[in-house]
Image (cartoon, one colour):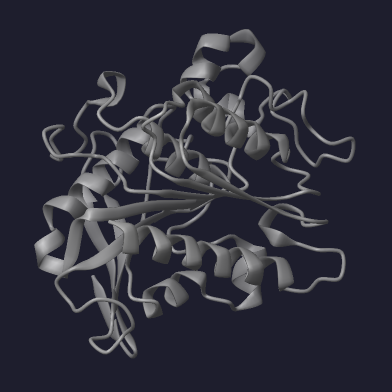
Amino acid sequence: MESTTTALQILRGVEFARVQNAEPLLLDLYLPAEDAEGPEQGSRPAVIHFHGGGWRTGERSSLGPVVDGFGLTPIERLVHAGFVVASADYRLTGVATFPAQLLDAKAAVRWLRTHAADYGVDPQRIFAWGDSAGGHLASLLGLTAGAADFAGPVGGQGSEVDDQVAGVVAWYPPTDLLRMGEQARPDAVVRADDPGSRESLLIGAQPADAPDKARAASPLTYVHADAPPFLLIHGTADRFVPVAQSTGLAEALEGAGAAVELLLLEDADHMWATPDGSSAAAEQATAATIDFFRRQADQH
């Protein structure tokens, strides 16, 4: 475990769970400097981040190669805004199929809540954020708190610890695996109904051939009136995850009476790539994310 101290402290490689037949699950913990914005140490809100990569690749603390390449450091900017951030591993599809990934995400929430006092975190103000596959997991976290189907403890984090999050930000998340293929753009790079798609690897079958599994792994399935507030951000030119995945979830949440905000970024592709190669869309998504979490933290 490596510690870095500048304007913030980073504890890298903190083990939060140990699962059978897999490497220990680790997280990177970002702690604000004592003079950072926001509340005093001891009552800070926290965000758990989950990386993208189609559930089969990716690394914690990464926002994907395009966003990382912009040098915006969205995680560190959130820390400078006064939040503790934990960026957590989860089992990839080469190791286990769904619901292992969601169980791991819940284990990360439970670990942070259990250790909240150790890191100056307010256990009632833990939020979830993810990009792409990580946005899918963050959305599921927000919608399945306490669900009996996903109550199994992972790596010693017992289900008696609350797995609820107080709000969710999801960047271009898959939300409806059953309809994702038909919603793909004509110029899509990948489609969920392609043989060997990321989605089929997640659930262990082609979505059309296993509709029950596809629904069970879809955030849309679990929408309810008491869901925590959501911010969904998606590019209108996304060639990997159709923009309808976010608009559909937003409509369902609104229809159920839950609080949801939807931000669509014109001409932005996955990972906020734009035709002019600028970082403008990534900047806008990052600013909106920090603003949303600040507002939600202030309300709790």
